[in-house]
Amino acid sequence: MKNINKILGAMAMSALMLGCNPLQLDTIDDPNNPSIESVSSNASREQIQFLLTGLEFRHRGYVTNVSQAWNTFGREVWYLNASDPRFQTDWLGQAGRIPDRSYFGFGNTGGGSWAAPYQAVNQANVLVTAAGNTNTLSPEETSAVSGFALMIQAYQFMIPANFVYDNGIRIDVTDPLNPGPFVGYDAAMDHVAGLLEQADASFATAGAGEFPFTLTSGFSGFTSVPALRQVNQAILARANAYRNNWQGVLTALEGSFMNLGGNLQAGPAHPFTGPPDAFNPLYYVPDAAVNTIIVVHPSVLADATPGDLRVASKFFEREVPVTITTDATPLVGTHQDARWPTNTAPIPFIRNEELILLKAEAHANLNQSELAVEAINIIRNAAGIGAYGGATDQAALIDEILYQRRYSLWAEPWGHRWIDARRYDRLDDISTDFDQGTVFRQFPHPQAELNWDQYAGG
Image (cartoon, rainbow, N blue to C red; front, side):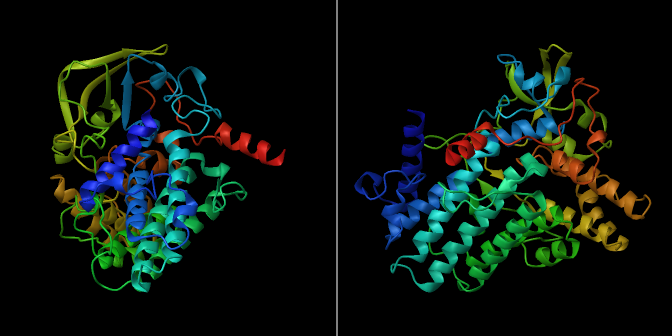
């Protein structure tokens, strides 16, 4: 029943966007899981639109799981849940708990950190095939659609790659019944960069007009082909940082929507518009009498710079703290997330603020200290904490940038601090003093992946 409701919700959303009745279109019953045969040859424009809309909804499938779990691993938040203590005990690694192949919150499939991203990857493959095998699109339209699909696919591949890290992911999944072998993290990220470069090439041949199909409100301000190309380059900048390709970061940023004097919040987002769509899964009523809620980790509050405007704008101090007792220690949440004004607020997936911080990080790693400090000061001045006055050697600048990323990118649906600490070999810097747990480095492959290999081999 839940799957049916999701299907109907996605179809109804498409109908609102297209001004048509989805019940009159019997060629695709489910835009999220279309029959490949129905779209692989001479798909109609309506079918392509359904595939695009379905891909956008698949694109946000990771948000809840990654926001709650990965941000807990990095001690940006606690996801307090009195109904099931495993959200605390297991995710915080209390009493020596370590992730296994069916770990709580991820199940046998890896949930939003594995299965959901791969569903988006496969849907993107279907879309590329459909766009390339129809005579209803012009060559420029085919390029635009393929560029969009490849961009989303690359973004989604980064999620399982950062979830299992050294354990590697499958990148050859064109045939879901015969997937390729696991490849290591470096190879996975090279694949991501390659997809984004392919997407850029596709966008480059798609013209300079509006994207030929309707996108959701999450891409408001990015509905032209050149604007989507800028989004693609922004994602490439993030990917290149994970590859330690610092000149590549700067090159990608030059083609992105980065604006050093612009709105730090600018960027594409995942929309949540309410029924028949879903609500924003990170929104909680301020000061509500609840015992299931995302709260700000105490170390984030303790380490904040006095007067930081990010603290005032992102953290809401509750009149009554939320307290959950675990088998290790009580957890007390005094502040909750204040970023979402309503339960239909969109959730950004990459912002101008992150791009400026990536610029600072790239310059620091290239020993271009003056340029790094200039970018750092854009962030610091926006936060109301004044210009940087510390040392300008590489180590000091990286310390400062990671600190600013901790507050600028706090609890975004990516687990930035967990990933940042790992890529700089600083997982030990993440404090466990408040929860007496451990910090995980990575997860094993979900049990379903091993089951699949056993099934395919048998």
